[in-house]
Length: 294
Image (cartoon, rainbow, N blue to C red; front, side, top):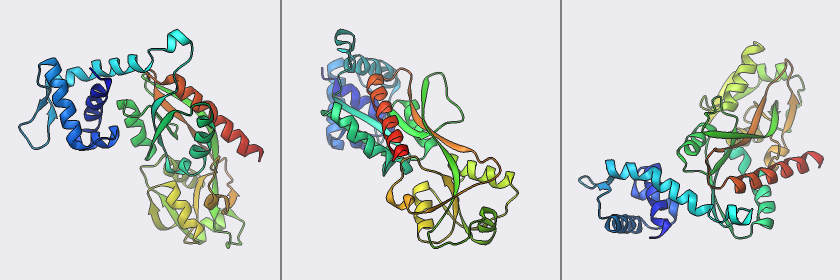
């Protein structure tokens, strides 16, 4: 029996449908259906309720999922105890907040590939809250995100960088006083689902500053794009490994004890690829340190 059948079953459980699972395991939806029929035939059981258009795991299918996770975890770590080193092959599924994808992530992957040339990496961009949910479900091996407010015992958090909040403006803005800029220029607000948005709003409220709301953006990357086009100003983390757009913005320090976004890696404590995640964390820290020295 191929372990890929169990990986497909887990993908269906995590993402809710054959179609969504097909995208995760890189096969067609029809192939997912064929694999599940094969799995059922090999066990002589029915794992799905097919009475509706979209097949759903039945009680037996749901009960099999935790066992399937254990089988996959054992398969992926089968040589670790024998060789003393994880086998850095196969695939790592990695989530990341958009602000990390244009600088920190690719530069770190370059270094990781030097030591893990056979590794395939699947990148999933999303906001921190959504990424945490995917890590909790086990559909991501790890995620680079803002430090969660709640970290359960089943999760493991490793800090990578503290990014202090700064006021960003386009290069054409000549004013220097952050209070004057914030009170007179259009303000680009983060979505209230974003940890960065919570931090920025907390600083504004703590310093009793009323801003002129101009627009709200869903990601830090989009906020930066609007500021770069001089459509307003914003409060953002001073990104530890910025892309070219962010690097060209004016960064003005904030008064009144500004807080920082703590960027790090979240994974499950029982992640089968923990040694690979540790290797990636090491490379992230190397990338951050190299940029700080530049």
